Length: 69
View 1 (tube, rainbow, N blue to C red):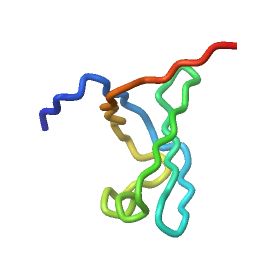
View 2 (view 1 turned 90 degrees about the vertical axis):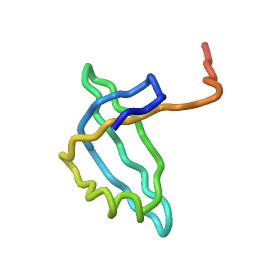
View 3 (view 1 turned 30 degrees about the vertical axis):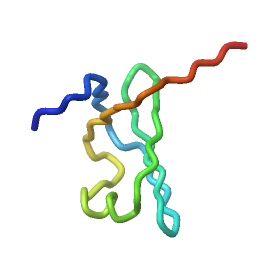
């Protein structure tokens, strides 16, 4: 599969918390970094995601917000 997005982070599913409609999927991308993606519960099931699954987080955004102390 080819994608136009250039920000692709490969990792391993560390945790999945399912709600009624949405699920939070925590992905360990290495180096002590974990990112969280919110997707539908249907997507989790259709993709067969479970703890230990290898995934690619594809980030395509029109803006990135930064903060400093």
